[in-house]
Image (cartoon, rainbow, N blue to C red; front, side):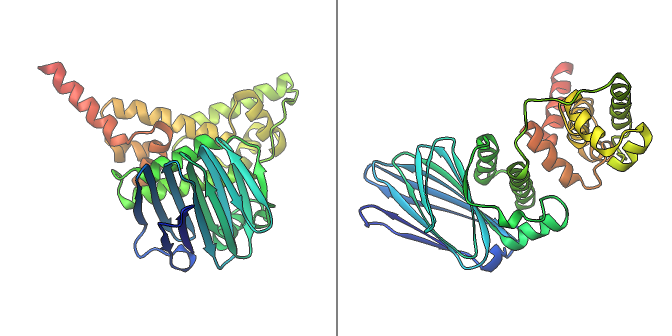
Length: 321
């Protein structure tokens, strides 16, 4: 894949090239480029690793810029207008986006021109089809995810896109943690993209089912370290799979595993404030890998668990002064 940035005046040009499949020499590759103009300029930050490339561009200028993206393999491309206006010409369609809009396109090979209007900010994410297929094989995405049609996305995914952009720009993380956060954010974005629109109607829950759902919540809370599968939870509560998933979301506002993650993070924060180490907390709340726990904690609280521990130690020291 390569990206060519050209202002309307044709006085500057920047071409960015990538290895096939976005394969990284290490766990994560990143670059930063700037083009300075008399009235401002454009900054481009990139991160890529196996199967994924993310490009964040900020234009502060009275000129418009065209960014040309080319990738010879089947892929999915996502565009986000985080500020200002964008126009994406995919060859098949012209998609106009204002601030807060996002769009998606699947291509056998990619050749798209994105016009970034004055003082605009864009996030573009290109995902190799093999990465999409891997997520589909794992059951994370639908089997037909790679056939997703081109369209302007109605869902508000701006907050998720801004979180990804923030991680691209964050130079305080190790490459390994940075990759975990980016991959988790992009996979979460894809999952949301493929979820059907929620309706405003809620299922009617009988008193008997409500009692079983409360029991299900208690089981989740009592087994944070070794959680039950949905099948086990259905068997223990006497609820079928449909009633468990739909009823739990309607009654508690979370999916079963969303509630599990929420309770894990709440307990983790409490334990860190009490002085437990990061590794101890990770094991207590059910993470076998402390790095995965750190990534999940950072995504949930927007801070590292080690910073919570250090703050508690500092406050303890001040109390003795």
